[in-house]
Image (cartoon, rainbow, N blue to C red; front, side, top):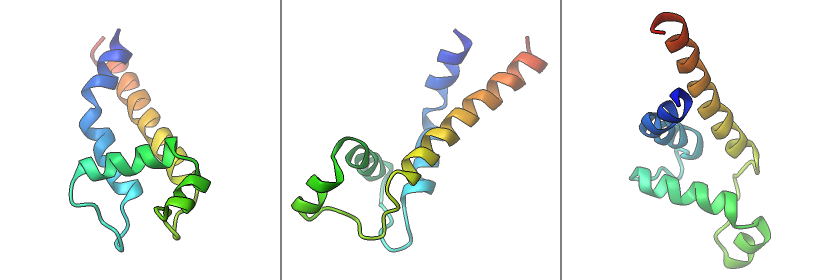
Length: 89
C-alpha cells in the first residue's frame, strides 16, 4: 500500500526526471506534456516507423534514455520507501 501511494504521489517527480532525461538544448520541450508525448513515442512506436514518418531524432541514443528514466523513477520510489520505513514507521 505504501509503495502504491509513493508511486502516485511521485508523478510530478517523474515528470521532472523525464524533462531532464529527454529534453536537449537543441530541442527543449516547452511543456511537460510535450515531454510525455516524446517518451510515449519513443517507447511505443518502433524506430523504423519513426524513420519512415520522418519523426526520428538523429541525436537519439536509442533505449538508453528510456532505461535511464525508468531506473531513476525506481530509485526515487525505493529511496523514499527506505526513508519512510526507517524514520516514520
